[in-house]
Amino acid sequence: MYVPRLPLIIVTTLAVLFGAGWLTDSIAASRVERSISRDVEEAARLEVSPRVSVGGVPYLASLFTGEIPTISVHALDVDVAELGMVNAQTRLEEVQVTRGQALNGNIDGAPARAFSRTISLDGVALGHLIDVTDLDIAHPYDISPGGGPAAEALLTGTPFNQRESHTVLVDLRLVGDEFRMIPRELVDAPAELSDEEAREVMDAFALTLDTTQLPLAGRATSVNLSGGSIYFESRQLNVTVNLADLSPVDVSG
Image (cartoon, rainbow, N blue to C red; front, side, top):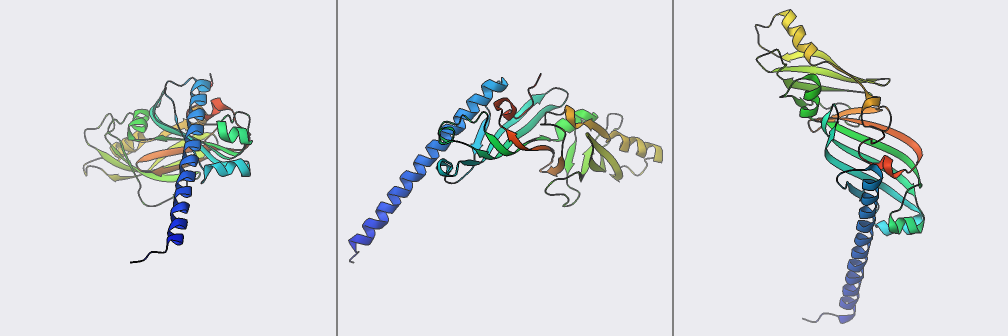
């Protein structure tokens, strides 16, 4: 069977060029990610290099646009005083860079449209705060999927003064600087529980936190529930990049 040589040569050449371009772009992005990770580790005095991701496909388009669409710094199982282990992410959006910064990842002092930090508390971390060691967090139904000042959660666990597990529906609220976890309904409990005992159980699932004391960039502006964890986010607009601020947890002081 005859195959025209010219179209085959063209297709092969384009495939090779595309592959070479993709490889070059991936190497450039990886080098920048390693550079930012190293710089953040040093500036924030972290014990482990954080995982960094730069957005934009292809990444090298930033050489011509002068903008890196997103830069994210991730850390898992960070030990935070009074909270225990938390997961954290810091994210920059629309970082304005020179060609040199786009190539070497030295973004300290670059302007960015937005800066946000998100931390998540799973059942272990939240249970530590309310003294419920077997706490499970679940969605009662689909609510506030994008986050906001309010959400809801089903908490299941055994309070310190109880013998059996209970399930309580709680409201999650941000009021000023405070996060308030307010028990609303005792969903599952032994039938013989008295009204007073039921109130004691619900009170065991109550919590108030000053979000300015959390390892966030300011007070929390959003709270939501996803994947069995409660997420808090703080957000600032029109910032100048400070490498120490890119630490997934607050290291000031």
